[in-house]
Amino acid sequence: MLTRIDHIGIACFDLDATAEFYCRTYGFTVASIESSQEMGVREAMLRVGGTDDGGASWIQLLEPLGEGGPVAGWLARNGEGVHHIAFGTADVEAATAAAGEHGVRSVYPEPRPGSRGSRINFLHPKDCHGVLTELVTATGAGGAAT
Ligand code: MC0
Image 1 (cartoon, rainbow, N blue to C red):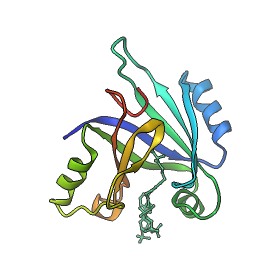
Image 2 (image 1 turned 90 degrees about the vertical axis):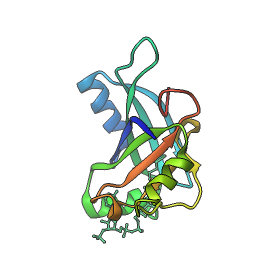
Image 3 (image 1 turned 30 degrees about the horizontal axis):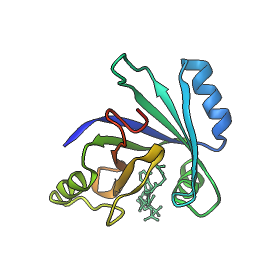
Image 4 (image 1 turned 180 degrees about the vertical axis):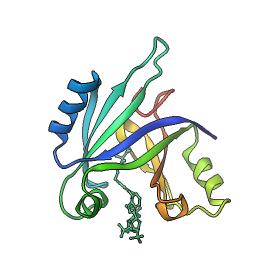
């Protein structure tokens, strides 16, 4: 079962400048910055809101590490903008399998490591009305970076 919108992934050319824009304009805070060679990105998680029980939502900024990865290719074709939407789930394998029962292909046969210790998979945009869709199981309760 999908429990929440975990984050929106935004592709950008300059992660530091884009993070500065979001923090200055909206008052968001940078919770983490990591690099993933596997995904070919440097990424920042920006905390949006949050409550006393730890609830928050997230903007994920994605800057390509090189020219070969999916974000680099997407930026070259489209320029900056929304790259994917991510839904939270307690069980990424089960959520991926459930989508598969509806004919939706996953990008990876097994979950891979994601931001802040999460486990992730992607659903192909061609099976999701043009939206690259990520499924995320966080290490802690409540979201990818909570
Ligand atoms: C590609 N397409 C997209 C898209 N990327 N449509 C919507 N949103 C996107 N982000 C469309 C293209 O326009 C094209 O459509 C078709 O899909 C094939 O694209 P392609 O790039 O030529 O083909 P592939 O197969 O090489 O790549 C597509 C695929 C790839 C979704 C498989 O982007 C992928 O593996 N993505 C998952 C990994 C990823 O995105 N990692 C970066 C975020 P036409 O109509 O021209 O055929 S890492 C992350 O987010 C982690 C750190 C985390 O959250 O923890």
